[in-house]
Amino acid sequence: MLVLNSNSAYTGDKKDLPGYWPTFGYTPTVALSLRQLSASYTGPAIRVRRSSDNTEINIGFTAEGDLDTTALLNFCGSGNGFISVWYDQSGNEFNAIRENVSGQPRIVSAGAVDLIGSKPGVVFDGTSDALSLTAAVSALSGVASLSSSLVLRFRSSPAAACSIFSFYKSDSPVRRRYNLGAGFQSQAKNLLQIISTQADSGNAEIVTETTPFTANTNIIVRSYIDFKTHLQGIALDSGGWVTGAVSGDVTGISDSAVLGGGPWVSGAPSELSYVTIGEFILVDSKSDYFLRNITANQQKYFTN
Image (cartoon, rainbow, N blue to C red; front, side, top):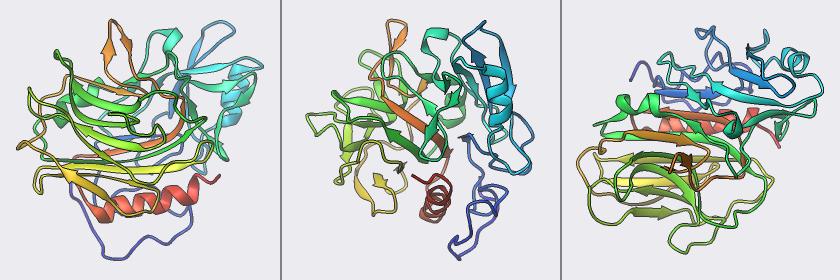
């Protein structure tokens, strides 16, 4: 949703914004973060389950807008903490959730907050961890453009093709509507890709980033799919776009979405990623200005 815009690029420090919107022109459809993104958002950041007795509580933010790690550690003690809900700050309540305790990503390890560089991060184990974003699917069906910016860190280079997020139709075969992954179609496993299958038949259309990512380093991945120009694209950090054609008129109907992996198969997510994620912003439009300024802000906040 367009609300305001400006032609001047963001140059401020990491904490001088109450959030991305309306400063950068668009209100996100999904906004998952471990920092407070908007002064208008007054809800919690995450819901955490502690390992000692499986009790759950909501954890919010400090007055400065950072995750309240004091409350988090007081709750978890010397044990581990796992996320059952990552709350959406967009106002749409498209929360990322996982009820199955064996598949909940971690936020506290043995009494210490998990980090992505210098900031708290959500740890996906690459074995069973993933969060469902299916609540957002209905709002994205039929939308002409989608774009996102994701802050993550691979804790090691993938040994096999993996997905970081996937909006898809659970058909046979699965139709990937908007999928960020790495290492598909025999590409190197350290090359990120945007993957799309809009038609209900035919092969996926894949655009591969040409710059390899480095494990154990924070990276920011921008991507989009745009049926106004019939292009999809991917960019790493502040680098330029790598683009390719995408067929179709509007994004096909999705019925499922996953963060931390790919489509569900036999009751479990597939293509799981061994990553730590700090922030995921998704908008139902494509704007270079918006994405460029999100990246600049994320780079200032999520330092190595």
